[in-house]
Length: 136
Image (cartoon, rainbow, N blue to C red; front, side, top):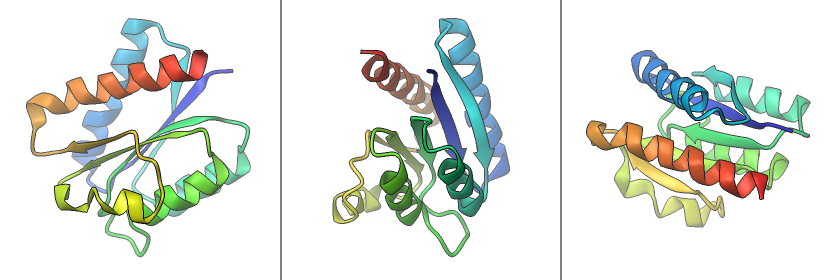
């Protein structure tokens, strides 16, 4: 069974950049993974994951989604459905990292968007780590 990758990001140019990083890297590394859903709507992501509870996910989530549901509440809801999934926050809000403990989310990483030169490297590192933990 393959590892499913999800992105929830409200900024469309940043979302497209993430899609590109992820799909290119999965293809280059020939990983048994697939980008399943990329959206700006947390409700859409929750609905999909609820309908496909057998899939284990790697979730790249923005915190501020310009929606009544933020990335923390989305992650908390995802954790209820997919307790083996890996959650990575990609955000401009470094100061919110402590909230992952408050919400008991067990985030894998907290990537700060401003550090664009590191963004791709950190996303790739999360993909490799999640994949290795998934297949072993």
